[in-house]
Image 1 (spheres, rainbow, N blue to C red):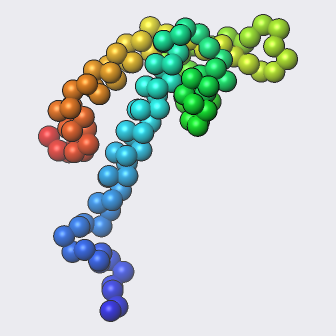
Image 2 (cartoon, rainbow, N blue to C red):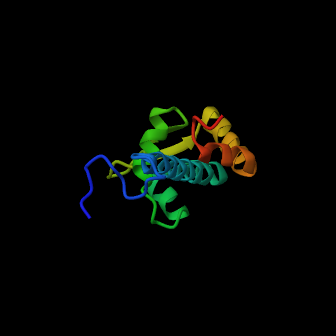
Length: 123
């Protein structure tokens, strides 16, 4: 069967419908990773990126997350004195603590999570 370029295989599914679900999956993953990094820093106090990575099991890309959280002023960092490498000590800011509390509340309330998954236009 030859398909025209503008038609999808499933006529009930609009073209581009998968993009919205992919967007929500990516956003949910970022929120979970942000929450995990913030929680790791908040639980044991300031730590280096390597220390955060160890707390999370070593499989998460923590350095890009730490840099993004620092740009958003949710974490702050200082260079580690006497270190021969470019180690930085990260700590959660007040804004980071508030964000972590909001993320925990969001995760604990299923109706909010379901509303988020439904999409921004879902009312």
